[in-house]
Length: 339
Image (tube, rainbow, N blue to C red):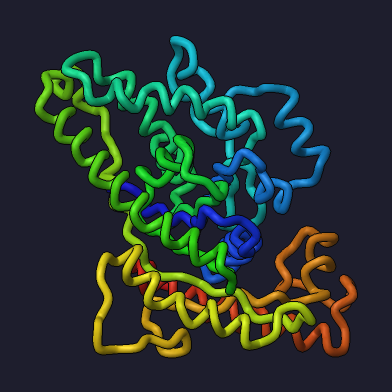
């Protein structure tokens, strides 16, 4: 039985996705769940949130096998095989598969193997490469007896993200209150459906071939990619973006989510964000707490008076802890993760 993989994805950037994963992973760990976080975005911003520059410099420049996600899959670009990941333990119950800017070079390899996976023969190598992220993450989770894998990916519909999402059981979509996020949502839904169908064809092609008998222990992800909901960004007051502009876009999200992601919408019902069952919560800004937490390299709800969280900041820390605990419970219920 595989460990469930939860990926946060929108092909529009700047929606607070990386910070959200960072804080939610800490919260799951604090609630007693053993968590693996996989940074599969070639920008590696999530890795930078967990590790300092000296640690990252050592990981990237010493090229130790398995030290980053790219070092795990790099042998597949030649004649080798997947290398077992070397996890970074952040705290008790929380482990990181570090990202790597060099991962972008793996995009061409994945793109090239996609059509080969529908051939009549020699299917093992293409299927091994296309499922490589799944194998790396499952191996990592088994090593530390993890109960959930959280994944960060970049804001695009490229071959890396396709392979990550083929490995994914559940998808959460973070959204901003703007036209670009809404358009990203419209693009994302059909992409998920297309990739799910195309992967099923490849699984059927694999099963109908003679190769499974030669590789009896070779497992493949199901390509479930089940969307469990979206998160919307909190409104911030700006002179050039009045509340009316925020409401214009935020109120369109429920219907677009149903049309594009769920492939259907009720004609006789208007869905508002505040009572939408697919809206998991709000991504708040927490204003001055965020840079404070980044400097201390800890989640905002773990800030103390020694870190500068005093007065109103101390109250905001308590609010943040309550918010992320509630979000963790909501997400846990959606993916059958008992907290």
